Length: 370
Image 1 (tube, rainbow, N blue to C red):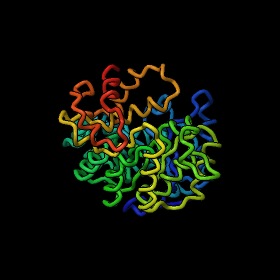
Image 2: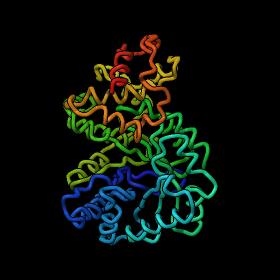
Image 3: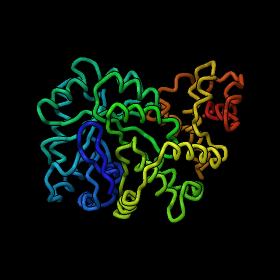
Image 4: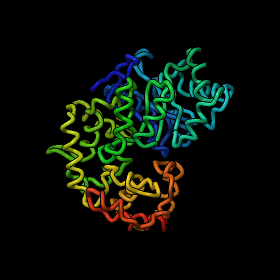
């Protein structure tokens, strides 16, 4: 297992993190809990959960599993979270933290996240006097939590803005081998500022393992595209933890096995990957971002194209893509999309600067219909 310093905290954390969203809820909680000590024995010491995960049972599963670990408490690190609108005062925040502590069967939480910041408005809500951030500082002084982190779905440059506005020890964001050009500004800023950087969705939310033949070009000889995607995240010096959701021991073995054999990617490697993606994605947007500056209506074209990528890759073209799009607008990277796709005036400036010569106008029209 590779271990990295978590920002300026001094903690040595595993390059693989155990994300608590993927437990099999068809089996008893005690069975899922057995994955926790198994992961620890494989070298994983970073455990991430939240209220609401897995029918609101994830924290409870971790509590059952962590008590099976015989090692001292300081040998592993726990993370949980709270959304800004659910913690507008110290009373509510304290209640949430104490509930998490009880479920996790622990006296303190190492990293507590201002969770799921999808817009500037939500960040501002977390920062109001007496709100979530200030309340967490109080609980930190009391020893109930050790560090305050932030979880965000904002794009790279917006991540930089919010990290500059407050004092956090770490950041959780969605970055993977497919979208890293679009997210890298935030990753780089956080790393340079001395924050731990945790990558959620390292295999693109299941997109890569579900379409391995499509992404065969990502892999070297002897590895799968899924392993290549994990290796990319784990070996990036700027990324501290690749947060993986596990359902079986085999999933843990795959991720831990990749971590056992990782080699860092140089800056040259990163540029080569960008080029490789551009050559092999065959009609998928690489989110270079040139089109964003060209649009006179301010449409966040790269984000719309990222969603369209998912449509192109999916084998299920008959799925309810309107519903998927609405979900992305409410919870995903399209929350702060600004102008709607329907506001496109078909000026063609985006297609003029597109390095892949994609039919952006046509795709925006399809999305507008959704």
